[in-house]
Structures are given as structure tokens and as C-alpha cells.
Amino acid sequence: MILLDGKSLSDTIQQNIIKECATLDIKPGLAVVLVGDDAPSRAYVNMKERACQNVGFFSCKHELPQTCTQEELLALIATLNADPKIHGILVQLPLPKHIDTSVILESIAPHKDVDGFHPYNVGRLNTNLDGFVPATPLGVMSLLESYQISVRGKDVVIVGASNIVGRPLATLMLNAGASVSICHILTKDVAQYTSRADIVCVGVGKVNLITESMIRQDAVVIDIGINRLDSGALVGDVDFANVAKKASAITPVPGGVGPMTIASLLQNTLKAAKQIHCDTSKGAGI
Ligand code: GUN
Image (cartoon, rainbow, N blue to C red; front, side):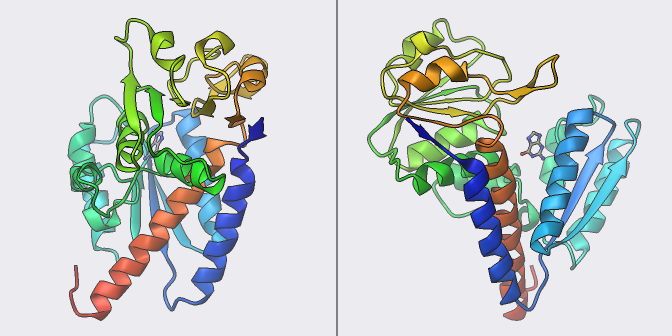
């Protein structure tokens, strides 16, 4: 069984970003926006900001209260869209219920949309064109690639159909030549799908959702779930101890997909900075 070590690959990617940054005459800049006081969101935002500092990016965190209006958030995004020091904008989700998430995501300039959530980038991914790809699915693909696990011609099952993970991951897998099934809340028999899959990816936030009996011998298992137990321990959605005995490769939690999300966000920010710099230096002035 191979343990897919996302922490180690993330560290390598970050070292490479540091080296590439040293050759650039611009400093990539990421703005992270946090609305409200959701504790996990705060922790993720802090992690993203720290990662930027570690690779030498410029970063700024904007915190708005839970009660802020949609117009206030739109005004902040308009300022960031126009700020030449900022190449990437990330609005941490979920947003408070009184704010329309799709209006906010569509207000981010597509060329600064390092989360890949703007319909422009979603459409580009769906038509297999270059654009910004959401960080978690991108991290999953990079991890598989680094272990030379090809998805071409494979049967892939994704459990979870979120816009952040499941749907874009399914599209990336399809674009890479996999036959993809997506299971979701209405799926009658998830095990019927997972037990036939070469590669099972799960990210729904439910402890022990995937058990040993639900996967076939030598399947590749990608755990995108993050759950905090009452003990304080972090676990994924997979019964790791038992599934690992049957899988040919599996991601741990923590240390699997999580660090890859950070690495991919940094890669997207670097890509945004290079594109903006390149286009403006040619006079395009996006
Ligand atoms: N909430 C959970 N995951 C993500 C993510 O990748 N980006 C943003 N912006 N919010 C999230």
C-alpha cells in the first residue's frame, strides 16, 4: 500500500515556487476575504495567509463582520479587482445566508479568480480550456500525477457533488480520460458505485463514510473529508485503518489532500501574477 504524502509534495511545490519567485520582477499578491466568525473558515484563511508569507508572496487579509451587507462586500471586491498589488482574490466560503454567494463570486475579476469559482473559469474547465481550477481538485490531480497514478481509462467514483470539490474534480477526471460517476445525497446505493471503482474520491464531511467493504481490492482511495472528533483529532471521511489494508494507495488525513489545496492555491496565485504581468507589459492592460 502506498501512502500518498500530500504534505511532502506540497513542501516540494512550495520550494519550487520560492525558486521561481526569485526569478520574477513582481511579487505575487493574494487577498483573502473572511466574512463572519466561523472558526474553521478562520483557521483555513490563516493557513492560506501563512502559506503566502512562507513563499514570499504579498498577502492581505480582509475581515468583515457577520452583519456586513452584500454591497459592502461587493465594494471591497471592486477595490481589490482594481488593486495592482493584488493578483489573486479569495473569498472564503461559506458566506452568511443574507449574502448571495453567486453574486459575490461573479464580481471577482475572472483573471484574479484564483479559486476558480467564477462561472467564466467554471466554463473554461468544462470545455477543457486553460483557466483557474479550484485548488482542492487541482491538488488531487497533482498528487495522483506525482505518484504516476494515471486516471486515463479508469473508473472513477466521486462521492460529493459540491461546486468546490466534487463537480470540478469530476470534470478534471473526465478531461484526463476517466469514466466518472458522481454520488450525492440522493444516491440510493453509494457502495454499488464505490465497490466497482478503480479510484474512489470522497469529500462530504462524514466520519467513516467509506468502509473496507465499500471498495474493491487495490483501489486508489482519495480522502478529501476533514472532520474534527470530540477528542480534537482530525479525520477524513474514510475508515483509514481498515480501508488502507485493502487499497493500493490512499491519502492520510491530515497530511494528504489538505496541504495540496494550499500548494495549488499558491500555484494559481503565481499563475495569475505572471499572466497579469505578461499581459500588462504587452500593453493589454486587462
Ligand atoms: N471553503 C472551503 N473550501 C474552500 C476553498 O477552496 N476556497 C474558498 N474560497 N472557500 C472554501
